[in-house]
Length: 502
Image (cartoon, rainbow, N blue to C red; front, side, top):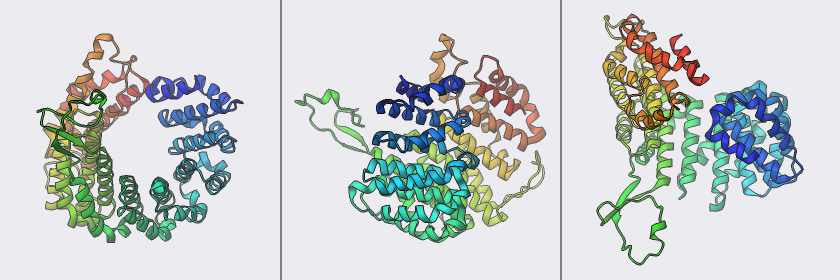
């Protein structure tokens, strides 16, 4: 039963969030059950609830952390490992004051577990829990960096294939520690961490490549201009990875005589009978990681990134038409970052503009105008994508650019952008058409589409940037926004609508 609750948390998070007060006492009780299998299931449920019922579950931190801390000493290895999973999921969004009371014993306990166990699955989950603890503690983790970095450095030297995942987790942990403690505290470990990440690219392991790209993204975010010297080596590599084709046509094999062909679920299609498309799914993940990394480099290395703008822009625009939504979502997230190097070079890192002022001369340089024009056109097109996550990221990208660059930037795409935004509010966009079947069963008002928060945030941004010029669109937009404030809508929808109107 308690394991089922964990599954429910993933699929029905919205109603569960509203009933945590009734659910959590049962979870806490089973975490102390005499049967190790029940305790393991309770840990699984706690992890799922911690992952999917944010931020409401954070209100139970004073109860969850002591329980999990005790379970780290459990005699059952599976319970120990699953407790680390709970810590990872719960601490990701915890504020420093939430983890502070247990920070010292928690770090010492996890470090002790890491040194004491030889079971790789437990080691990996312990490292992940340490990383999450660092993220939660932020700068308060600084006193523990020396000790934890020493443990991670040993793991980052592992070279056996069976230890690749543990090596990658250690590298990931160092990236998270960098985020937590900041540039000055992490500077002594920047070089060794980069060396491990770059060395990982020489191994024939897509997993290590993914971990390396995640580390590059985090370190670029933290080190800023100090990351710039490695751009010349890394950007061309990332561009090559992003530009790779993750699928290829191959000659179809003779399928006659194969008794199990009907059970084949490989990623391939046979449309003409002669050729099949083979998809290298591992490359999709590495491509996604490479896009994230190059986006963070553009966002945080300033004018030093400008020489790479052309090749990065070209490969990202091509990837925006990728068939897989994972890739397109990352592209939508990264594209807006390509405006920032131009702003850093030509405008000293910031722009001044007046709300609604499109009559005066634009303060945008020619380079910035060109970058904004290309990126916004791509993002506005992606607002018509068939995948909600892609659309949400595209809306966030448009919002970040127009709030940075002002009304002159929006004027370039205003008509299409406003029309696409209204289509989303009215549930007429391509990504919403597959939901039409639900309306006949009366469940139209029961589901909260998380990406709609990004859409409504963009509407609020229109008001802040366009000023009085947005007034003419209010008769069209207001009824669509108010529909989300109806009493029949989930509380998250109502809050979203009220925030937009405010």
